[in-house]
Image (tube, rainbow, N blue to C red):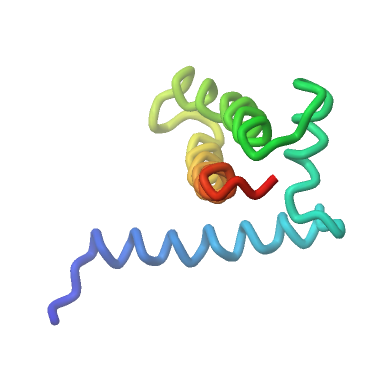
Length: 104
């Protein structure tokens, strides 16, 4: 199979995002893997169902979305915000699956 620079780039970024997520998760690790989202949901909504944590994750991601919208492709740290958005999207996929399973 012939190498495709675009596909290779995206796959490499997935590997880097995986490493970035692991490093941040290790940095903020507690016994509860979603502690930051659970606490955020409790503070914001006074409950912490997966749906509430999903909403909190969207709010956390929102600051990065705003940064991307307020800056062009050459803007400061736009690349970092895009990577953070991608990671938040994966976290939100996890929370969506937990909500659908009724795992509270």
